[in-house]
Length: 157
Image 1 (cartoon, rainbow, N blue to C red):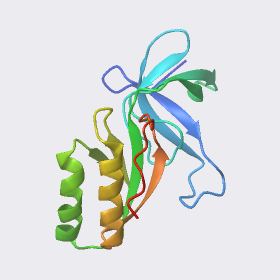
Image 2: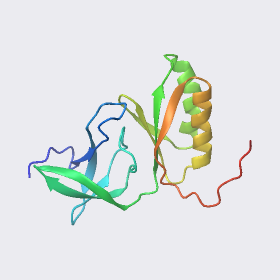
Image 3: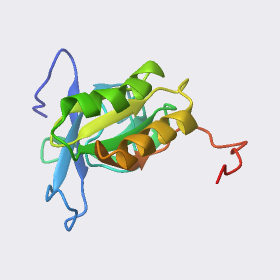
Image 4: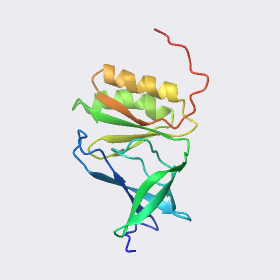
């Protein structure tokens, strides 16, 4: 198998819904090859649902590529995606600050793939994402919630 590598990493191909808004048929994520057809994901997905950074996934080889099969172990991260709806960078920064302050990071592509580490309060992050959307800085969607949701807080509305 010939696999392009970046500092010892391999690419994992995710097949996407053919009618999705982004128009992409596949997405590739970087991963660390472990053993027995398993890979630990090393970046956040821009379009794939149900996986996040640091998840361990099973892959199958097909036509020289490693293709996602299933999640074996969830790594505890969550993934949200932001689509900027304003060109005002100051507006984005004002609302992003709340996410950055609680440990969130993002990778930039056609959308922002936002990583919420396991120790981040997922409810505070969701509130910050909603505040940014309400202010017109962005729209967002949940790609995968890997945080435990036991002890859900009561609605404040």
